[in-house]
Image (cartoon, rainbow, N blue to C red):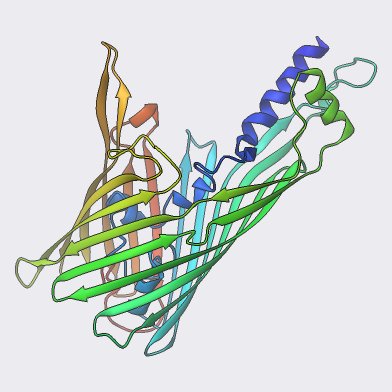
Length: 366
């Protein structure tokens, strides 16, 4: 009976701390979830056309074109049937006519995880009052700066990011990294390049395990973790878009992005070692700059088929947006429509507020 509960405790802790490994692949992957319902609706194909406060995440060069002197955005979404919560908030403010600063906060976490490592006392008695709960959460803090260059149509920007990851009182990590991006506008064309973790991002893990937890891990044949360093390798996002004007009321904005990773072969459309390329395609239809219809396709993978072999799957997304009184933007996205890998649908809402200029809070900034 005692062994049964010890094994249960180990399973719970391991499930919450699966990121402890030092392998660089998928390190800090919570930073790839995305921000803003507009981006989710367009399958993350927004690196070249995001021009509002969410640029602090997607491409800090886009901060130069925020609609007002100050913009604030917020988003909340749930994953895995509501077990995991993802929260985002950001603010951007113009410093002068040629520069803008921003701050972004991200949290992805699972709360109220039962800790049964103390369920059985030293005499072998089961006491449910000894069950505690803890959270496993990842935090990201991005400090952004964007500036206009002396070349017409060219903007650039950078992020300094601080990462904090915490699993109850068992383990925590602090990390530091840099991002850099550029955008170029040529008539109706938009081009962009964004480098994430350009110098690699390092997370320093430290562990604080009680004697009781160490005993549980030892009796169940698990290795006691040691302080370690986890590395996130660089990633490059390339984007291209073109604005098509149908008439005075209607415009269409399609974009294609290439997400290039450098941490080895991944299950994406173009696989390689060390480079893999994951394409994203999205579009946005605008009516008078106050109503938006969006769609996109991403997450293209090959999965085993029931009859043998492999089948290509993809994830279509959709979304809408509306601007209220030229100052408030509300966006909604429905993701995981293709139910890839059995994941349930996700409903994503985001809100953006323009505090100053009276111009429309257009998500595309055109």
